[in-house]
Length: 130
Image (cartoon, rainbow, N blue to C red; front, side):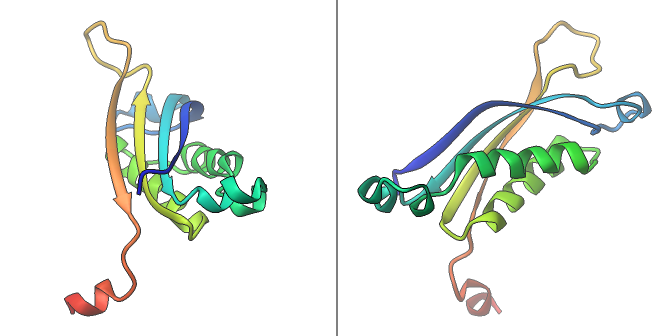
């Protein structure tokens, strides 16, 4: 698959972190999403209903960051990826890059983050493993 929808620099406030000070109030997070999907039907039809709506993808990711709370960025990124995959069956895979803009570290840096990729399981894959 070479088609992808890209969302860059999605900024959302959320309460995530290990330290008590990180869990007291929302802090800024930034996400990039690369969503692998077949975009040929949309290109041919020139119709929003024929594609994965990037506005809805952004809303799904934002909702996870703003409404849920986790200690680790790894867990948060995984939950965003799972929500994106669950949102639309046309999504084959998603890469989530998640950055925390103000990590509580005693060094000068702009952000810390993680990158994860999750793919939709092939039909029957679980049965074949069991």
